[in-house]
Amino acid sequence: MSLPVHHIALVAIAAAVGFVWGLREIVDAFKFDTRHALRTGGAWLLLLTNALAAAGIYLFVASLIPGLDKWYAALLIGLAWPAVIRNANIRLAATMPDPASLDPADDRQAAAIRFEQIYANFQNLARRMINAALTRQRVQLVIRATRLDLARLETHARTLLLASLLQNPDMPGDDYIDKIMQSGKDENKKVALAVFIIQNFGRDALEEFIRQQGRRSGSNP
Amino acid sequence: MTDILQTTVVLEQARAIGPLERRVLRALRDKGPGLLLEVAVRVLSFPEQITPVLRDLRERGLIRAERFGGSALGDELWSVTPLGAQILDAAEALEQRAAGAPAPAEAMDGTALHQSVKQQEAELLHKLGDIAVRAGDTARAAEYYEQALKLVRQMRETPAS
Image 1 (cartoon, chains in turn yellow, red):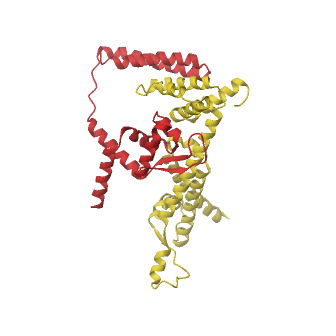
Image 2: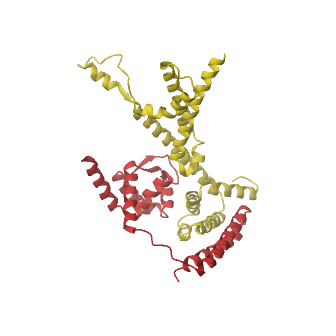
Image 3: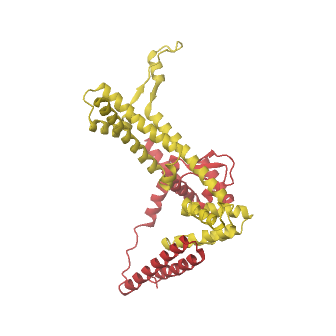
């Protein structure tokens, strides 16, 4: 009874290390918005795939090499699996050779799949999914901000800018906000102000302000 | 040989990059992909001003655009390509080299203490401003921030005078 539990624990160790490895990749790629990035489907897809791949490779290697049922082996394989998978050419021999081909080696070559490329493509897909999700969230937030009063939104943007000028006096003055306020319709001004706040002070600065205004008016805008 | 050629091309492109192009590339690299209005705001510009810059950078393979539904912020999601990031790094390295080593800090002696007091005062006003923002009193926060900013600007001017 203790044997399967022991094995499950080792697989879990490898999976956990793979998960942390994936986490590091996301933190590295989305430094500017890690917290929100981690809440997207793309991030979980990447994390779970990393965990499953690490666990799968541990199981595979442990089934081939006896004596690997140790916690440090699981830890090492969990750590090393990206290197293994990225450097290994896994050749999938064609079970049905192409009759038009004269050289069977060419068939195998054609069927060879470089796992490094597959993993890079997968990472790219997850990254694009995360970026798309983050952008959709920002657009939604801007739409919510357009329901606010323009004067209040402007005051908030100017206040945040003043505060940031204290941290970094080299930042440009509030003439950019003046230009926004001179441009087009009120709706466009609100959109530009909301984007200005998000881009310079983060989503939280706008989300908190929207909440504050909602509390003040007694309803969520 | 190919590496040398590639490096030469990167350096040539890095030298040819204009200030607004550099700011656009930096904004995309540092803050990630963005829609047209977002990119414009990041570089404190407006969509009509940066649209030609974005098109030009895309033609040179330094940035790419992906379709992104219909949105008031733009319908393409712009991001920097690996080549764009490489050229930006090279441009920044060239810029740093051109700027040379930073000048040694001036000794301030007597003014140092005065500056330190002003610094503390500015920090205190900044904290008061933060408290006022949290309390929802943006008008008072703005007053505190303005006072603190005045002090910071005074501090910056003092060593030069």
